[in-house]
Image (tube, rainbow, N blue to C red; front, side, top):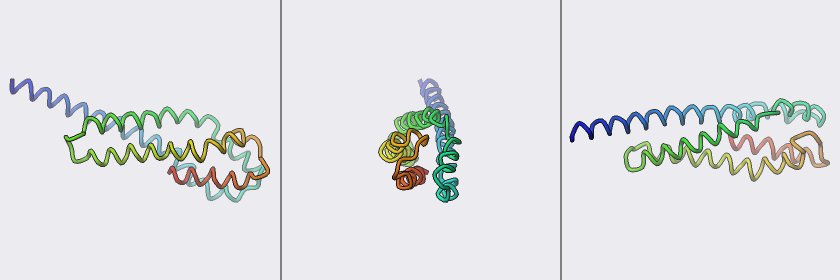
Length: 143
């Protein structure tokens, strides 16, 4: 019976380790576009309207990173469930999960409405500079 418990414990440890690796990869991949937005923001804020629209084309197809963000959310949630009452790192994993969730809150409340108003930056409304500021700052918040 002691052997069965040891194997079960080893399997659990391996599952936790594997989930930590998967979660780390998803979170790192999700951070990459956020960091890119943040570091590009300072130069893009200086652009006039037509050049800003041209620069925004660099982000075509980036919506696929939503899959990575979903993977980060699900893997950190699963890791938190596995670590509940079993590890001191439970709190850190919960903070990671909540942080990823906060980036999604910022996206859906601040960024997405701007994407809709500008048709994903293919048109410049009259208040485009205000919209640009909100769009860029929302990405900075997420980063």
